[in-house]
Amino acid sequence: MPIDAAKALAAEPRTGEISWDTKDVQLYHLGIGAGRPATDPDELRYTLESRLHVLPSFATVAGAGSPGVISGLSMPGVDVDLARVLHGGQSLRIHRPLPAEGRATATGRIAAVYDKGKAAVLVMRTEVADDDGPLWTNDAQIYVRGEGGWGGDRGPSARLDPPAGAPDRTVERHVREDQALLYRLSGDLNPLHADPEFAKRAGFDRPILHGLCTYGMTLKAVVDTLLGGDVTRVRSYATRFAGVVFPGETLRIRMWHTPESTRVAVGAARGVPPLERSQEWGRDDTPVLADTIVEHT
Image (cartoon, rainbow, N blue to C red):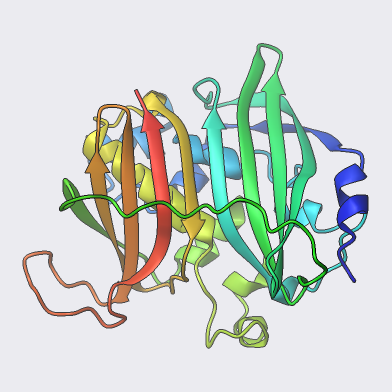
């Protein structure tokens, strides 16, 4: 079995120093679709260094090359084919607002290994702290197809009851044709998102968008639409990746808002129909993010 759960869980954490600056933050923001329109004051806070606010989901790419998903797949006890790997879910807890420039220590380890029968799930945890204390904790849930079935713990269910009633807000965000190529420059160079031949080997007819790009686009929509653009109000953000997005498609983001949290559901489809029309989208509004919660003040 390529995954030895006991060995993976017992492995020593990997620790490394990471740093980032305003250019890294700006590149990330551009990669998730910020800057449209380019002169909009609400967008300049994501793109102009003199006004820069850091969207909390930047934590998923800060210090590219630090202990993370790709690094975790080479931990002791883990030997898998990258073409069998899918990002199943992501959770992020913010301990303090992220600075636009910083240096910190990132500690990564495999926190759990679950047996889902037809797949194994690795929970890769990264904890980041600077001289002033903890900054954020990231958990990535990684599905490895074909590696389950050894009789291990299935793990907890992440499924939530559907939100009640109609959404409070619905917005659309178009995914540019080149968005995956831009987003990958923030550190996730998995060829699944750029190389057509690799994508076919992984079972897709063309490269797909990074799940974490959809994740960032969705958080930005919640912050801009419901939190007055105040990135410091976000406390945590968790999702399950329920489907893929292809560059060129459009995200439809539905939000159910309360004072403490926002439930979100995201679907994708080809084309950019306006909200007032009732025609079906080309991929039937295919779910791509589910069981999604943004906790905030």
